[in-house]
Length: 408
Image 1 (spheres, helix red, strand yellow):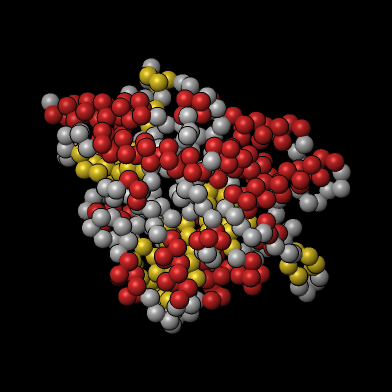
Image 2: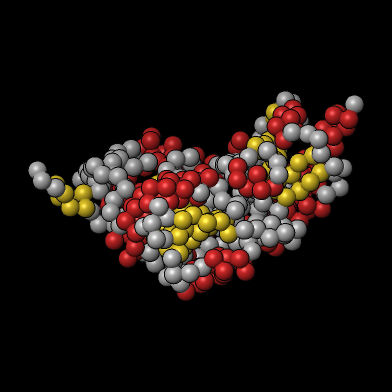
């Protein structure tokens, strides 16, 4: 089992006070904190062996290239990709999804086709498909949620036909915490010849993820949500699909040969990594993957199940609270969106900050979902490996204080 007391010692930022009170960081769904080993690995790269990768035959460049490509192999093992060539480094999940929308979508989607997404998608897995549909004339349709904040699988089944070319779904909702039954989604999509893109920005950091078992065609993830640095992320794609796709960006490194009249593209994965990459960030992501692997993703998941169960129990006792998302803890992750009756989420978050508690407030880049919920914003507390029950107690006490403050 994961010992959060031990884990917390690895995160320097957590050992500080905000407004004279110990920091309680409950916004890991937006961005996770970084363990010292990640910070040190990036610092070592800049101090000891900074050089461009792939292009130098001197020792610094060779060492940087080795570390950069080692990180790619770590990511491939972490999600059980068939080959390291199926891992494309990107700045984040947003860029990874846009890469697919441009390089695959604009060469495979036509006016006769349909794209399906769920009603709980982050803007990053919604707006690119809206734009693609607008450009191609394709139909974009939304898989509805049921009364339990889960996907309506009967409705999804009814929406599937030979015109559906892509199903783009989140692995875990960043608002509701809902965990999507990915294998079931994929099997039904493949039965009608559709591909599946999985937005793993929330899921990969928190759930054991095996792309071969899930059989997804594409997977996007952000490094900064899984203990890695900002500006790091990756796209997984089945190799035959990536081979067929044209490059997303052109320039240096992604080419094999250039003449006055044209160019030939490099092999995977370099075909999709034009220009000097984020070398330090990739190295940091590789170390973050090592850290999570040592913890064990089954342990990470169980720790969050325990925290989420406790949080739902304690938060439900706060007078006037409305919690959004599945009631069954097994069907949700460690992100809990809520509102207090009569109070704006921004006011709640601002007052909690006075107590040293950091939560998110707003629409969480999911405005259509909030419209469906009938609210303009929600407050959100989200947990990760370094959180513990005592911090949930602090949150509940502070929410009671907020409610009493506004009752005066």
